[in-house]
Image 1 (cartoon, helix red, strand yellow):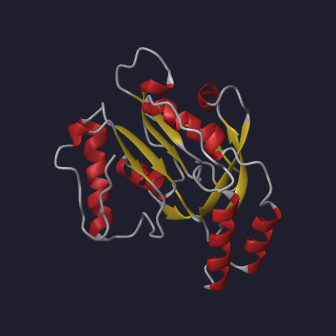
Image 2 (cartoon, rainbow, N blue to C red):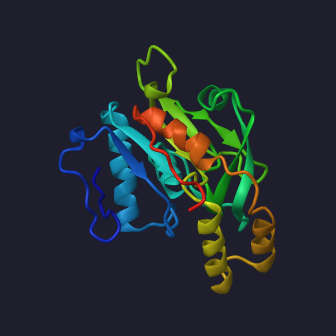
Length: 221
C-alpha cells in the first residue's frame, strides 16, 4: 500500500499496473473546483476507469464525487444543506445483494456537495431524503457474476471510516469556524449515539471487493 500526494505534489503512480486498487478518501476541498490538481485527478481517474478494468476504484465522500465527475457527471453544492453525523440511507436491490439483504444502513456523513445523478453503466447503491445519490457501483466489463470481487468501481457519499468521536471533533471545529450552523451541529449531536454501520457493514463489503480478509477493528476509537 502506497500513498500519493495528488494535491500539493500532484504525485501519481509511475506504473498503475502494480496496484490492484485506488482508494480516494475525503477532503476539505470541493470536487467541483476548477483547480489544476482536481482537474488532473479527474482526468487520471477517468483514464484508469476506461483503460484499466483490473484496477478497482474505491471512492469515499470527496473520492465518490471525483469518480462521479470522471464518469461524466457534475458535482454541485446541495443547496447549502449539510448531512452531518449518522444518517439513515435506503438501500437499492443492488446494494441489498452486497450488504447481506439489509434494507437500510446508518453511515456517518460530513458533506454538502453531491453528485445528483448516477453515471452511465453504474448502479445506485442508496439514497437519503437530502441526497439521492449516496453511492454507486460498476461491475467489471464482461463480469460473469455479481460477486463483490466482480465490482470494478464502488463509491459512498458518507464516511464508513468515521467513528462517533471523529465526527464529534469535526463538528466542534466546523461549528467554531462557522462552516456549519448551530442547528446542524445540534441535530448531529442528538443522533451521535445512533448505530453506525460504517466499519461493520460497509467496511466489510469494501474488503470483500478488494478480495481481502478484514482485520478486527475497534469501532469505538
